[in-house]
Image (cartoon, rainbow, N blue to C red; front, side, top):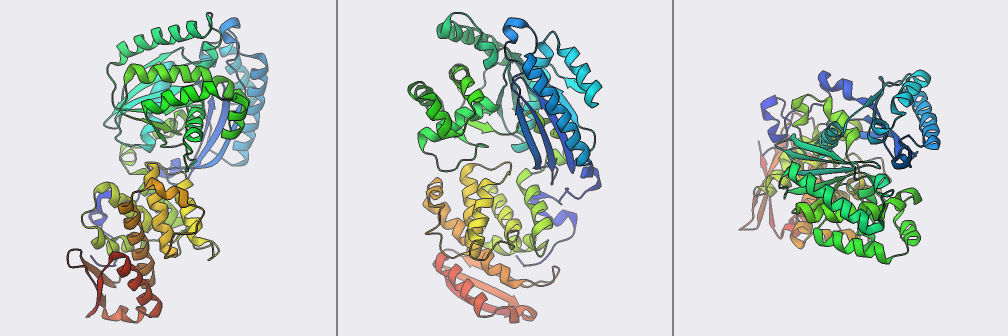
Amino acid sequence: MTLQSEAAPSEWGPFGRPLFDDPSTHALARVGVVDIGSNSVRLVVFDGAARSPAYFYNEKIMCALGAGMSETGRLNPQGRERALAALKRFRCLADGLDLPPLTAVATAAVRDAEDGPEFCAQVERETGLKIWVIDGEEEARLSAQGVLLGWPGSYGLVCDIGGSSMELAEIHDGRVGRRVSSQLGPLKLGGLKGGRKGRKDYIKAVMTELAQTMGEQHNRLFLVGGSWRAIARIDMQRRGYPLKVLHEYRMTATAVRETARYIEEQDHEKLRSACGISSARMALVPLAMDVLTRLVRTFGPKDIAVSSYGIREGLLYEQMPQRLRDRDPLIEACRFAEKKDARLPGFGKMLFDFVMPLFRSAPPARVRLIKAACLLHDVSWRAHPDYRAETCFDNATRANLGGLKHSERVFLGLALLHRYKNKREGTSFEALYKLLDERDLHQAEILGKAMRFGAMLWMHKDEQIGEFNWQPKKKVLTLTLHDHARPLFGEVAEARLMSLAQTLGAEVQVKTAS
């Protein structure tokens, strides 16, 4: 494969031509969404590649609109005042950012409260925001679409827990199937009679009804909602897990049971402080934990994944054309980053073509990581040279990128670290390396050093420069350079090629082609 640019649409490979610059997606370049929940009111402004947007602005106010509703049937008066003040602020921010009209949705608390319509009318009168009050099934659908934003084509059961309700939705083939809403929100459970036993009996009875509606659901369980994320933080703390990224964090049924016991045994104030959980959220965790324990026991998922994407992302997904939905969110985000920040946008594709002969047997999941690394290989060039490698690793492992398992984040970060640095020892990230096995560590190093060498061969994007031929059984790596590119193969480039060969355990041959 040659180090060259390909322009024809049919030649863009399995990831297709980038769509973030397409006129049909420009309307999604910056979108503001307001989510009025039972616990919090939040403004999120999405920006960047529409298929995998960055969070341009994200602000949450804990209002507890649903607190006390079980007894009064009305919104919490103090929460209502706080929510109105927050919405006035959000409207001013939107005007200042020159955003299109905000999309505002309200869920269980507002739809169930006697004074919900009155609250919506007041908000529209005083802020101009028209609130879309959605029912439980619609809430379930949008939350499931949020999961699909990050995991296109996923199969499983999405469980979104808010303060006053819990929704379930099944996803398969990129679509949302059956869905149902329940009253299993922690704010509702806290007002039940009969103590914990009465609460657990109620949860079991409701969960049995939900199972009858949803049928068997033994694929992946996706957890959406602040209470689930708080439980995941506690699970990380219990395990001493090194990567503090909640999105795509995985748990097992056994881990859920062990974390339930851990929460019961720990001092909640100390646990809250250690995990960075707010007092208001921590008060709901034991109630949510009872729900999660019964949920896992009832449906028996094969594994459990935490999703930071939910209803807000689902609203963005709702506006996407199908051809954009079908795209890989990781690749679209990396293409956007390259165009915005790289010194030579477009070279990442050439670099990918150049290094791929080293990975001929790579499965599709690995190919997409190689593609992502090549697109990101130069986006951190502004960082100080002494810290560039670490900056690349940190950005890859902690960035808001969809469709990445934690082990894949570390693989991508390590490849980018080796793009700027031969050795990975001595960094502050060594605890994260244990998320990869020895073979993956080695493959990430090969990729990084191949990019490190390939980056020395910059020329015009449409010129052929050279190609690799790798014979793994013979351990022979052949570099063929086109004659006009031969001057690029200087001392530094040669040293980088030899470093790559050493990692491969290979003999090197360099040829010139006319």
